Length: 133
Image (cartoon, rainbow, N blue to C red; front, side):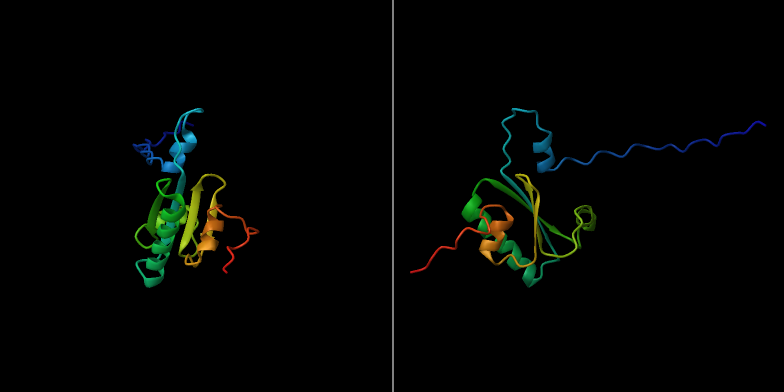
């Protein structure tokens, strides 16, 4: 029995996606002087008042505590749903700290500065709040 094979369709390999800042830092040669600082992604749902407040709050915390040492990407889950799906975003706003490791996620209200600082590993949960006199 002589079976004839169907010709294979011309399949082109997918072009690689450009690496993110976090991936570039992780792929850097050992000993390289690349220090991306904090690499953050904030997922929001359109420009609602809640999203606008989250963006403003995160930017204020970053400027106050990480000035010049961070990159922040703001992603609208409705404009770029594939990114939201890739990062398994279930609610917005969600802040992802990609670098420095470990990866951390903060979901919900970004207005509480202390909570955002904990989410970014800039303060511990047990650290006492500043006392007011």
